[in-house]
Image 1: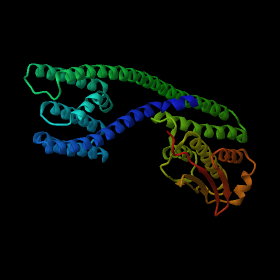
Image 2 (image 1 turned 90 degrees about the horizontal axis):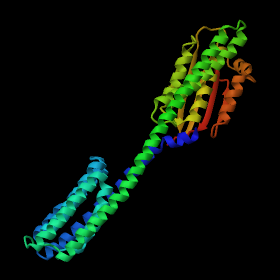
Image 3 (image 1 turned 30 degrees about the horizontal axis):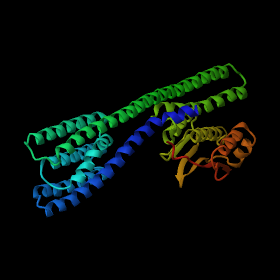
Image 4 (image 1 turned 30 degrees about the vertical axis):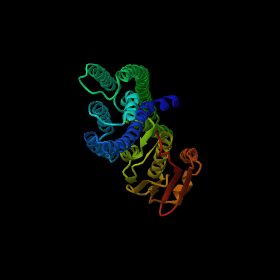
Length: 389
């Protein structure tokens, strides 16, 4: 089961890894391109290539603007990456078409552009752009031979550029295609495991409900109230455990439990079987499955004990519940305003008390206390795992 839980979050980790890789490529490309373009524009202006210099003066701020728009979440990373890819391609094609200096920088962009495009945009789109660039470069080489244009490089260099760019583009495509196919298959397998894990939780919940039904039938056939109550108490415990699996089944993440909705479900079940008023205030915490289930079982036991023992001479009473967190320390309290110490004496040594203590001790930093203060107050303190992946 633990292996399935670990696998269930792998798809999210895979997607996060791909986005992180694209984020890093976008940042490095944006910063480097802005610096290169602004520096190259100064050199072009000094050498009298004014059109090239003006174009780069405009291009540099656009690159930086695109970068900051993405960093401040005004546009998405996908949109910003596509824009960055377009700006790089436009800059390279403009440099091939308009006289200027910086041939070494052009060779750098030609050498790295296939990989940059794959990192910035999808493989399919990057492949189309790279094919178009190869065709363009071949056209420039042919036009320079026919003296239709004044090429940036000699024919020999242009031929090497076309051949080298074609080979490098093919190599990048093969590597990225292999990686992409592997990640797609891996994501598909992980998705299958998530479906399987969801079905496991669903069946566990159904099996628990079946056991609860059997215990209920058995309790109904027992005439002695004391023994029938034993079955009913276990039904309540199974109900608290079943609600965890139901919460997991409904959630997208199989390791996180929304404590607010989970404990509210338990309270709703308990409120139906008692005339006492149950008031609660639960912080919207998200905890790991073990902590959530233990706290749910302890809450169920503490409230059940309050219902049975706190108000022996009254038809209506109040039971208050709370769940809070401070500095990753979770505190849950169950308090009634009944007979207090007499209730505490009745609980000493019974199964519910033993269960609450054992469940508290099994939590990280768990501490269980009971005190008689204008009634009886049960308190559980533990460390919460708020970094569930």
